[in-house]
Image (cartoon, rainbow, N blue to C red; front, top):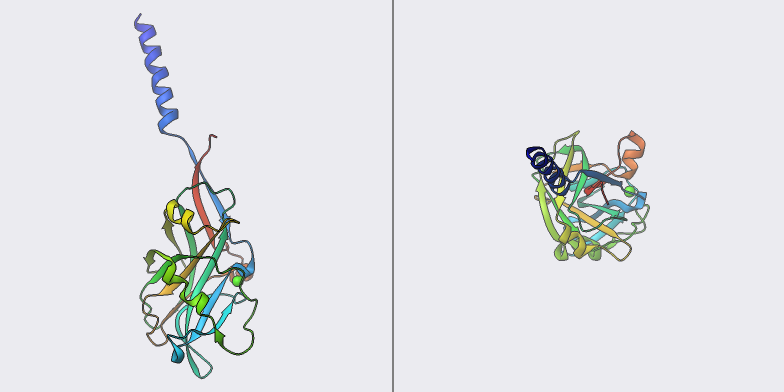
Length: 214
Ligand SMILES: [Ca+2]
């Protein structure tokens, strides 16, 4: 009798472990296309009119304030990822900090409506890029980070926010803004697809966890 009770307890324990300690695996998705990341930069003298460029071809995204030619330029980072296979999980964004200049404070990360593929280079005269520049206004602020140069940093995004901003073809987009972007010469540099290719490091990527068992 005692033997049957012991066996029963072991079986119940085994079922409990399977139910409550479901093993998880990490799904990792790197940015897919070089034009899925880049920057939008504007001439500070015209703000709040956003006059400048969107550019997806640069090896690195400058986040903040810098001098370009005779002008002070304010720049923001843009990243978009294809989340094929995502099923409502929370996700984590992974980006790599390359450098900093002057006194940048924090990076503010927004989930934004999709900006689509970026131009491959700076084209023509400075023009109205307000449709991209102001995406943070309708975006969702997911967090702030103080990155360290030469290190990866992460931002967690709730699944419900991903669901809210995901496009029909399963793209999720981010904008990275410097908290003190009007502070002269203050900026961080973050790796893009192009930088990662040249430097042979991982491209910007997203992770989420999913059960190993179906
Ligand atoms: Ca790019």
